[in-house]
Amino acid sequence: MLPKSYVVFKWVMYAVATLFLCALQSVVFSHIRILRLTPFLYPVLPALVAMFEGARPGSVFAFCLGLACDLLVPAPFRGFFVLIFPVAAVVSAWIAERLTSRGLLCGLIVSSVGLVLTDCFRLFVQILSGGQYLGLMARIALGEAILTLPAVLIALPMYRMIYRRCGTEY
Image (cartoon, rainbow, N blue to C red; front, side, top):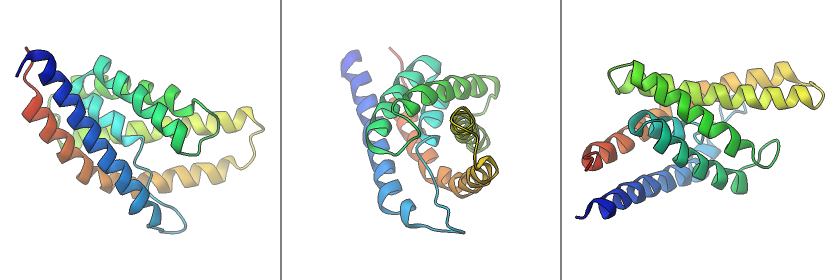
């Protein structure tokens, strides 16, 4: 394969894996209810890709995923995910560079970072709009994070396989 087509193939594979995980969120995870909470996989995805690919490619991926999520997923305002996903990707890439092993522990840490940043930004928007129900929203955020972290065991191996098979740089 030519180098450009190889890079395109790698990102198409990331897109296919992400579409599968988004479908899994819509079809399976949205119907899992534990204490009236459901897992929320979307903030985990850009964090995991940035963990493998680095800050710049990860933030571009995060921007594209944020754009798709802003069009399809309810959020406090339009552009919410476009703003927070690239930030989560850059922070996740920074953490992954500091931790030498990009394995399960690093994946759980960066996934937690993605979830925490998204929820903190959601709480910040709530404070700016009046600040009601902050305790309830914080409890929901913690419950969603606890329910979502086991889903990293599905997403991480998919992204790791793509990174290893398509990770050769020219």
